[in-house]
Image 1: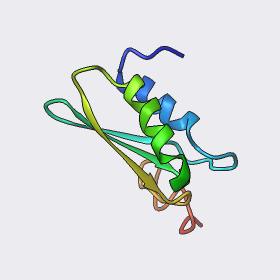
Image 2: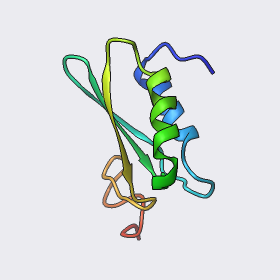
Image 3: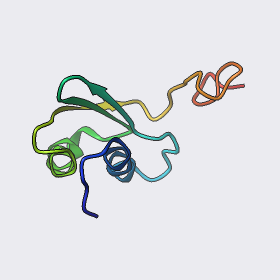
Length: 90
């Protein structure tokens, strides 16, 4: 897959880096002016160096980024009402 560095394409790359069985999507936060925070749920620490190289190829050349591993179970309020994902979901 070739990426133009758009938010949705970087998120798709993050999703591809998830381990099998992790249903939560990767999160991408744009931090102006040219920085991204890419959060990949369930990314094993041993995969981190290779994942960082993959994300570097996905983002725009002028963007810097942080690659962050988050637990495979997290919750959000985006679908509401209440918790919709993770261990605290009903």
